Amino acid sequence: MASTPVLATTTLPFSSLPLDPTGPPYNAWSRYGSSDQLGTLNMLTPSIVAAAARTEIRTGMRVSLDWPLNKPTYPSYGRDRLKHVIRRRGPEGRVVNDDVLDFNTQISSQWDGLRHYGYLEAQRYYNNTTDEQLHSSPALGIDAIVNSGGITGRGILLDYASWAEANSIQLDPLTSAPIPLTDLQRVIASQNITFSPCGGDILFIRSGLTAALDKLDDSSQRMLSERPTADFAGVEATHAVLKWLWDTKFAAVAGDMPAFERSPPGGGKSDAYTAEEVELEGVGSLHEVLLGGWGCPIGEMFDLEGLAEMCKKKARWSFFVSSVPLKVPGGVASPPNAVAIF
Image (cartoon, rainbow, N blue to C red; front, side, top):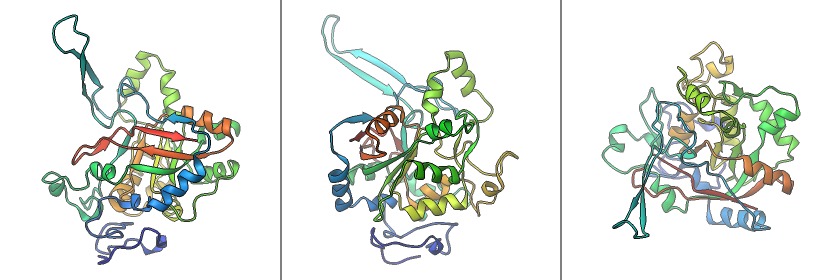
């Protein structure tokens, strides 16, 4: 295992992975030190964030990126719905209230923190952390992200849904279908996007999922959540995608999809998966590598509808992102509390 941290600005080729040769495939363990809690968020240095603020904040227009906590009405993956109770403080007539929220942090817009998913076969989380360590300490908690200033920097939107519609490409975000890297590269070209050569960009991909769910009636939403498998479109889980994500040096990745990647995660579980997904060497999903290998937060079910409209209006696809999760010591995930600023 690497004994000394690597500077956040240092470029390491994808071919250098795994950094810990005794660990699972693609791992970047100890890149930022053996006790690191931030992973790829180390790329959000003060100079990177300051530069993003200077170049991206021009008008002060702001767009929320959070879907309401009570959406979807019926969560998939066997998770419970939000419970919200308003409690009057004192006797009737006293105009003072509290409210109590009971919810799974994975049911709506969320950042998956580094405690959420590890390498399934190796049974290790980021930086070779064991499940026992997570259950006996706050290691890798979502609060570490908050203590570092949140997920804040230059955001980039790839509006895959609009591009697919404009190019007569069939897209149903409510079915298990891969979003190919080749298509994403065409979106990048059509939107004339240039990524920061220093790294630290925060990637957002719009599939149209939240808009599709909002169009369903109550009965259809319930039936969707009760399907045998949680089938949703998402980024294909391939070696090529991992190489692109690494080489582009994203600080975090997110989308409006329930898993960011094709769901259910795990290439090879169905004959419908592509050969490239089945052959993802030694791992079953992007989650294992991004969270368990690189310490890269994954955002899911972000509301990107208003963002897409603002990007079209402004004729630009980059913006400043400010996202500060809940400061829960040892937390696994959190609503993003995110805004895009133009």
